[in-house]
Image (cartoon, rainbow, N blue to C red; front, side, top):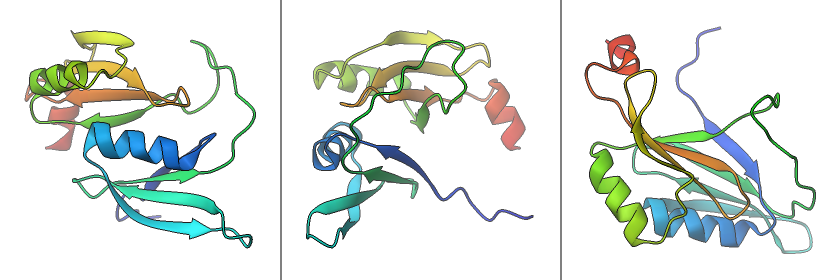
Length: 138
């Protein structure tokens, strides 16, 4: 199977509009579209990041799933930036919660972690030329 591109990542939120607003304000995403339920309420909000990647946010989550270091589950989304230090300063200025401060990861990437209003982990990462990711992209 030949994949042409990665389509989207989906999360379920307590309040899709609140979670969408978080990504819109903190990460310069833009709303691509909304899908409504039969009763007219918002069912799903689709966001598009400047790089063209999508985040699909389902509305109405009620049950938290405990995640830990050994949980079998999707772990986080990763948003890549060109300038990690500027992104880190911007995150702190905006009051974004910092779960893992700016550091160099084991692959050689520069990164920090935060989370959205529902606790979904977000890695913000820069891939310098010496990182394993950058080398693998060549």
